[in-house]
Length: 114
Image 1 (cartoon, rainbow, N blue to C red):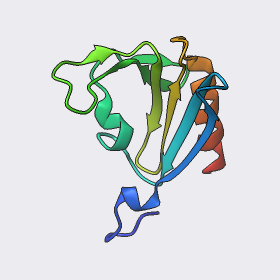
Image 2 (spheres, rainbow, N blue to C red; image 1 turned 45 degrees about the vertical axis):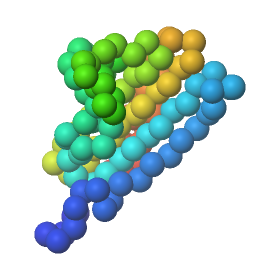
Image 3 (cartoon, rainbow, N blue to C red; image 1 turned 90 degrees about the horizontal axis):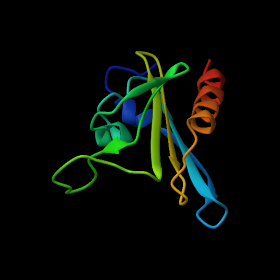
């Protein structure tokens, strides 16, 4: 549990695996608390679709981009709740990021958090 003077961002953990040379990267971000509207979830700009027990999108507004756009090589899937949040960011240089792979990683982390 996060105490009254702590931010959910204080509890963030992040792991990364893979590389562009090996066919892509997968980042898993987790926190004790709700990350809605924070970190990578700030990038979300519509196009949200349910996949299994998560939400996923490929439509983002990154950095100083004026308009949201679909990013063929980037996929963001997440599940948030009052007690915990997990985000999976998958980058596939070939433009075919797998929702199944992202959600498998998300589910594994979610279960490990109790």
